[in-house]
Amino acid sequence: MRTRNLVLFAAGILFGLGLAVSGMTDPARVTGFLDVTGNWDSSLIFVMGGAVATLGLGLLAWRKWVGAAGWFGTKLPPRDTDPVDRRLVPGAAIFGVGWGLGGFCPGPAIANLAALRLDALWFVAAMAVGMLLARVLVRADRA
Image 1 (cartoon, rainbow, N blue to C red):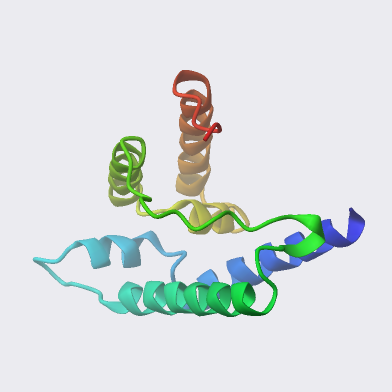
Image 2: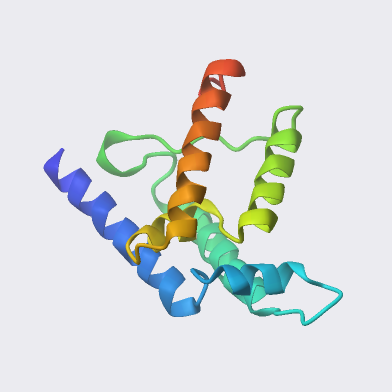
């Protein structure tokens, strides 16, 4: 359990550093990306594309060489042939509205807590309330 927690902690630190190095902890960069009619900042596309490609190729290689076994006795979730459902669409819409209004998504918001940014603190608090409400009202933690 201790090794698992250390690996998870190191992965979180690496993720946060990657966000900071790429400039994705700056809400102005996010809103610049969303402002397609003004001074559009396309850099987020390259960061997201790199992340999606890394994850996709990594999962493909992992499943080919190891199968569905994850680290520390876990199992990878099965491939879903129909991943879009009635719960995904409103959740994605709420995420997008929050992302556009706040300029943060969950990872950069949490990374910004280390910088003691007050706007990140408010965003993370509101995000936590939303997660609790989703868990209680629509049982979002259940498949």
